[in-house]
Length: 504
Image (cartoon, rainbow, N blue to C red; front, top):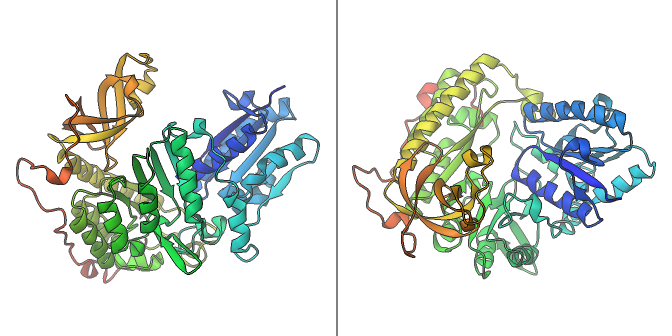
């Protein structure tokens, strides 16, 4: 009888890729996907430890699966990923019905561990990416043999895929648990990454996204030759049949001139850069151990704007970090209003055991204050996003059609391959576009005339004829325009002079 599995993924794109690899490995052994958790023979939760909310979701899910396990004791329940690495004993204590607790570095062992449990081997805990105990070579082996196993059904779409450039992180920001649960930074060989990309393209993939905790710190040295991210992008850009290349997430101090030039000059590399600022105050950035000042961030941002004026730059922000004052929070509001990020991922500070902030700094910003600052920053970003999107009205953009829009997905629209539906896709600057068109266009590059803009998306119509999309920097806009690279910020020092150190 065919065994069926169910997997629920919480967290970042790295986790999405990890889940794809786990499913691919199990499918290779004859497993199939179940329609729901309660219909599966094995249920996995791939976890995130960046914020408490993500962990709470997993414990809630484990509570729901408990009744299934009680009725069918042979169902294998597994907790995978970062939370498994950080809290392996606590998970078994709070949810003793869990059979497997497997860290990020041991995911390739999941099929054999499941087999062990099914033959009566009992619960298993497999975690070993402790920075003191594990070597970089061991880490490299743990995922290098694993990444080529892919499963298109687990991707965002069959024609889009993630590729890991490296694992781990060596930055040690005060608020972040990732270096502790993902281990030290270890790059993959460039030839392996290129080979994986070629294989994906042969399978129909048109867009790849390179992922790493700090992807732009990628560095591989072998035989006296060093390959950095800019070099890797050039190798990937040469792959026939590949249309688009993205990469996330970037660390501000590693945004080098050669990398910016590669984004500008390589035709397949998207003009989209996710470079988290985390905060607008030098004092808070210092407390967060981010390793740069806001002046240095703005210098980096200015270099991007000079080289690629129309590039979409996005950020992450944390509100309510230890000791954050009203004046310090205001510097973040000023930053968002001044820079005009395409969008930002905004989070309330969540203390993480084992981090420097948890051990050394009080979580002294009240929850209600965090919520209000979160709301204010979201409102400011919404205004900035709307202003940025309005620049595109009247332009023609090339869009990779991803599928039905969220609205038609919700309506469960099924027009068939020749029927018209509301579709969605993204531009080379990663801006979401919705438009009505036949569903046979899904997976294709299509020119769209932009007619309207909202804060989070553009809308338009499929362009007539076969004209190529006009690059944004070749367009003339109506109305008064301010050069995007002419950026200046009020000096945050006077505001922060009497306040506690800033957060990242």
